[in-house]
Length: 66
Image (cartoon, rainbow, N blue to C red):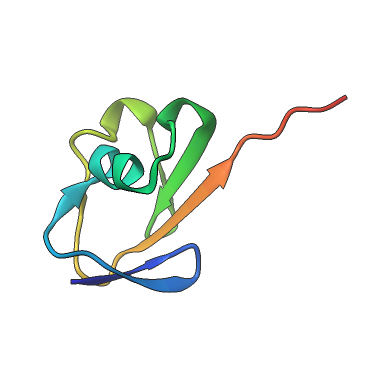
């Protein structure tokens, strides 16, 4: 299965949830925002939102400053 992850093709061997994808990538879900097919996914829905063939996933890190 192939998705687009941050603008690049990315292969998955099986369907995963957003939570599983973030874990695979070694990303702490508390420090990012995730968009699936141009819609922001609420953090409490990461574990129930299934990544499907052809999805466009964007993961954005929060950056603090001042």
